[in-house]
Picture 1 (tube, rainbow, N blue to C red):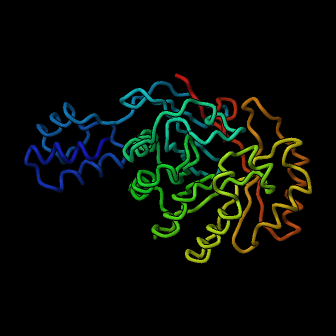
Picture 2 (picture 1 turned 180 degrees about the vertical axis):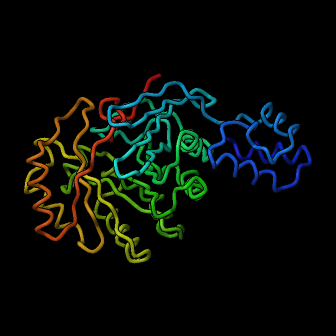
Picture 3 (picture 1 turned 90 degrees about the vertical axis):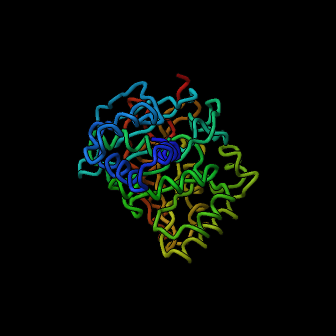
Length: 326
């Protein structure tokens, strides 16, 4: 819900300050309407229902994958599209992939979101309403800001929303913000965020020229500068940085590419997450054998590496596939 509108409405009605906290406590526990907030007077519940929409987002469609992943398409009040994903794992984890923008202006060539028309930054309430939508369905315990958009282009709203996620059951240590290396927001995150929120950085190529072809942001904020800022995060927070690396056949998946990546990273400060490419039209994905060979090169250089488990590919909910013109 729109927290600013909620607080303004309560103040105009002369309600005590704790009413806003009561509403949020009910919402964060998964109540699906004001009617369920039984500690609020009935008249106030009716007034809020009339004056403060329960969600800043309209749910347009939901699709469920064969693996249990659920993707929701939302419209904002001014008509922009947003997608978010609930990923269910066999070990019981329930992880959300949250969007921070409608579309993305940074046009990474392997990402479907980058091909969308960019809409706007989302508000903190619109980000939280993605999470609340799934919280009303079931308990959740992890979140990644890896959906539509570059989180550090919308750093204030992203951090404001992340700070509220523990109320929904997602601790800061189970929250990850992913960036392509947008330096102004990254510096603010390193300097200002005291909570143990995790940091992930999209690299996808160690060679600057190759990375520029895949990620135009490289021309503005070179990878060397981004990794230097990541090292400062490691020194200040004593936490590793996750390196995201999408595996594109014949583009960035050779042993030489792996050695170049390993040369950039400190074993104590970075962990690589190799991402099987989810089709968006321009590339082919690396084979399982190629990905495993790449991983072995990193491990021989003492760089920890894992291969991401793909979820929701059959409903275009996997990494890099979020996009909608609806």
